[in-house]
Image 1 (tube, rainbow, N blue to C red):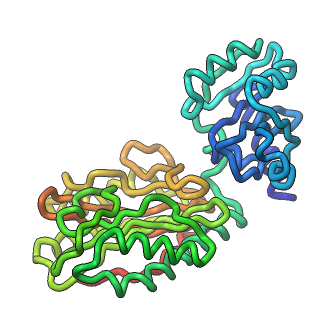
Image 2 (spheres, one colour; image 1 turned 120 degrees about the horizontal axis):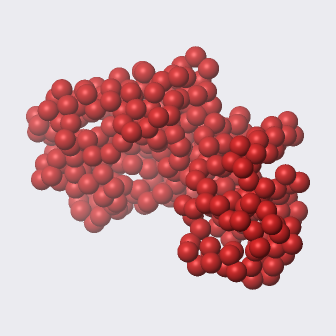
Image 3 (cartoon, rainbow, N blue to C red; image 1 turned 180 degrees about the horizontal axis):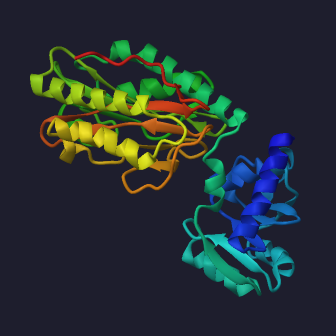
Length: 352
């Protein structure tokens, strides 16, 4: 109850600071975060100083009643918007610009006599610091992922297809009560140069590096981890790539603490890879927040102005991807604590 009271106070402060009388919430993760309704993709929330209302349709009548902390209005558009219209007469109403379609925006304009205002990141800004319950769900998801890796990794041998490895990881996660957090990547040999290469029918070779990016979802909360493993005796060039990425990853992990600049963390890892002549092959940011969405704030990239705070859950995942040769990514999931960090991912990293 105390956590919800604190959230409600933060929501009201957010509306005031944004100069809004109400906020129409359509991003599925935000709908779930605010209301508790699990099928946020089929719901909307109208947030006002007097409280919130969950809008969904008749397929979810019972579920919404059981899950939502807000009163519910069960209908489909345009009845949904017609119901809200009298409450919003003459008010300044925010909408989530990064999720609402142009067609949906036109519907709002047609139905509401209100000043519509585009917003970005309002609810997401509240989601970056996790509650104890959220952290427990993320920890449980990561524990399942670690167990899956321990069970499946002995079978990552020459002649096995990438897709079969991905399917075994997903099956293990489901058997332990989770679901796949996203489409897994199992990229071996030259396919390792594709950061999000998915899993193909390619058979793992005799002296390959294999990048495995996967995670579990528990109670709507995600985990995210990458390990690069080897078969046989990879070339010295592949070993060099691996050692450079491991050095960058370990240095960045060690630097995670409250007050650390996200941009500085990215630069730390990037400078190490550049020192090995590999900076141009680091094709993405250092990491990102993880929670109800697999990618959320904060963003650990060079252009970020964010700093880490206790309660944030982030990834550290430098990588290098050399066309025609292969690639390496190593990723850990971290909780920012009051005095440093806790690494939530416990799967071992190979030594090459």
